[in-house]
Image (cartoon, rainbow, N blue to C red; front, top):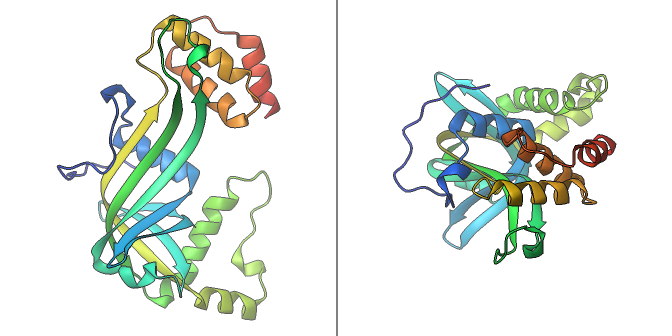
Length: 235
């Protein structure tokens, strides 16, 4: 896990709904690194532009760097001018919560979710760094799969060089880290258990994962454990 201490800007980009929902910086970085995919947003004279990208996070000279690549023709490439700020939005699992799932009355329906925002000034890198980025990104991505890792040395050299020549690598020097884990931490034990049990019985795998995370936050409560664990293990 990266250990970082940043001087954050006074105005937060992410609206934190409740203090207990905030994800502390190191855990937010770990969350983003584990996901490895998000949406990059920057603005030009016409307004916001965005692309969905894989990324790697590394630390250099006490700085946290998010490194991405875009196709050379992507309009965001021109915006990586060393002064403009980019925002990376990394989303995790989410689930809808119906208002009649609660034990107590007069609740409202809502969404549970986890997300992290990383932002900072974007710098366009030289073409000579394309291969190093490709190797690092593949290593991180392939490590998530239960197989022998594939790497660029296994690609036909001419095709590999053509592919690498068609991308531009961008470093985002992160100076703002914000995360939110909205898992109804503020609800009563009875309501909390009722929601966990509902999520554990849902059809969606993402709901099962959120149920497991919620159980870990209040492990002392009594849940419908058999069904919850069984459904998650099948996902």
